[in-house]
Image (cartoon, rainbow, N blue to C red; front, side, top):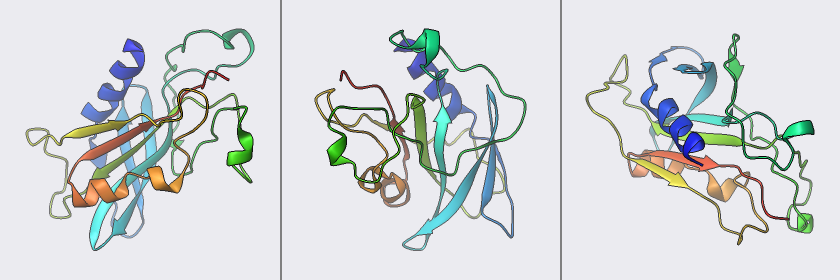
Length: 169
C-alpha cells in the first residue's frame, strides 16, 4: 500500500503540464512518463481530468493474487481520457453493461485549472482528496459517474483522486 500511496503523490507533485489552446488535451509529465488527459468545464470552471492512470502492473498471470507491483515507466504518451474497466467481482449484477478486467489497478485524477496561469505554480499547492470507494471490500469500483471528482475539483478547488483496487471476491 505504501508503494501505491507514494506513486499517487509522485504523480500529483508532477502536475506540470503543457497548455493547449484550441483542443482539450492536457499533457502531464509523471515520474513514469507522459500522460494525456482532458480539460473540461463544469459550471463555468475548467478542470483537468485523467482517467485510467496505471499505478501497478496488471495483476494477471504470475502477478494474480500477489501484492501490486509498481508500474514500469513508459516511453510514449499514455492516453488517460477513458474510464478504466473495474475489477472482476461476484456482485457483477450491480454493474450492468460493464466490461470487467483483471487489469484494473488505475487512478483517476481531477484537478482545478487556473485559466489565467500558463503553468502550474508549484509554490501554490492544492489540497488533495483521495477517495477510496466503499463496498465492504466485496463490491464496488470507481468507474461510476457519481464518483467523478469534477464537482469537488471545480467547486472545492481541490485535487481529487479515486483508486481502483481488487475486491476480496
